[in-house]
Length: 446
Image 1: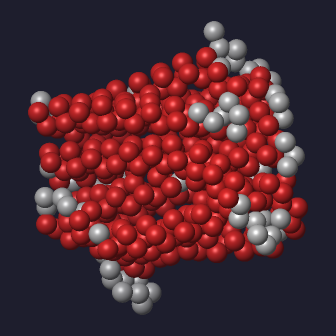
Image 2: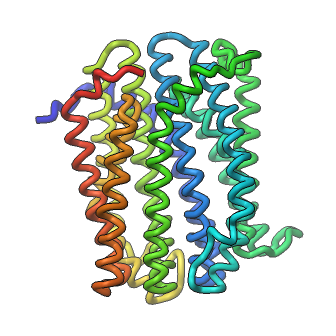
């Protein structure tokens, strides 16, 4: 039996950490969905191209977002140990590492863009190539932000990234409106305009958070930008923690890209449906990530202070709140799926198939909360390799073959591919729950 926490103060502490993250993530989700709604006015080929190219970008973006999680884990542990200057040194090292990686992968991916976008539909391919090239401009700035976000999450100050992110994403709506449709004197760029608008928003986000960090008086105690603050030992620690998460992120999100190609093989309608549903699901993913980050922060700080039982209780409290949020959204998907789809696109076939898919994923939202939150907690505890192996195996050995068999071979089409995702979600959540309950993560040193 799980010893669910009853301390109301603990739930309030979780909420205080989680709500800025949820709010900032929600702002990202809203802006991303506004992008899709805007692009949706250009037709289903435009939706398919933007969604597919966006996932190619996300394979790299979310792979290196592991740097944010690794930074958070180390900073939270050092914060719990009251080693504040090491918190700042970790942040500075993460920023330097992120910028180098960002510039490197920008150059590589920009040159190979035509080979990375290869759907069967020629229109989707052309639009997708243009989208990806403009989207890559923001990659080095995103990598810089990862280090700073991880620092602020680790010291329990998530409101800083939240404010910067909300401002940047509000600007993203304006940039996209101008560049997609050619408003206020801007060129009419269509799908490519959505990508350039997103890149400009990321650059703004980086400028905002750097400016705040340089001017905020309390950050001086951490000595983030002290000369010689980039440390080889911290680089090794970041790589040790982040590399398994980066490998996990690469293969998992590459798996989702292949999932979209499986849907594209079924038809443009299936691809457009899957792109839209994935954007809608971000509304429930983001709260789970918010509570997962809260769980990771509290677990790291409690473990750094030598309080493993309190670390466990904080994670269970985060899980309870996350399940309530995602379970509620799951009910909304089941009951109002058709109305939600109608906000994105006018194509009747896409609306019908999307409504059916939302009923499937709505039914497993609580399982998804469990998998996301507990995996974040286990990663913060240092079990990044375990989480990596479990998710990569489930993704490539079970999910993708099942999606192909059910969707293509058995001709269940988009319904079949998403039934495979249901299996993935439930299985991953079950393994994370069993591992966390065993408690061996309490003996891992960072």
